[in-house]
Image 1 (tube, rainbow, N blue to C red):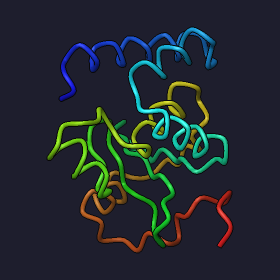
Image 2 (image 1 turned 180 degrees about the vertical axis):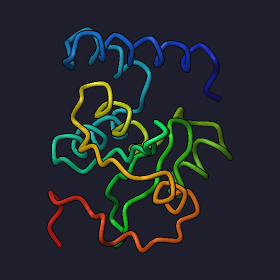
Image 3 (image 1 turned 90 degrees about the vertical axis):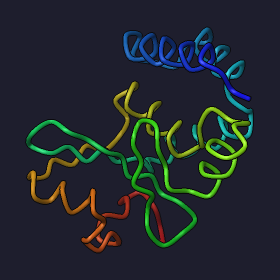
Image 4 (image 1 turned 45 degrees about the vertical axis):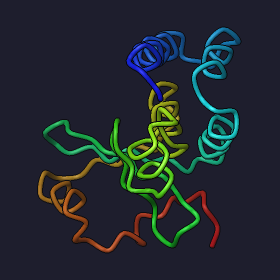
Length: 144
């Protein structure tokens, strides 16, 4: 299974990435040592395509919308994604540290590449409850 050491290593790496403001060779090397290659490549593709949005409430809370192959983007948090891969490989089997959606959100956030959408506390609460139709928030970078 995946342990606390990998988790601590990844946290330090995201801090380094944010401080450097770029995906340096040393950080990329560390990413490849912690995350599965397929997960990392898919996450980097999501970031490169601009498929990550950060929804920020006026109280400072935030979540991420990450495009998926589904009609609606996934609502992701730092340590949770509703995708099948996350529930099966991260939670149930404990064979992966995270999914491509969370990894993309963390990378985009650290590199300031997520489109930031500021919303009211009430709108943010709707996101948390998933009451609001999400299709209107599909990334402008994703073609349908």
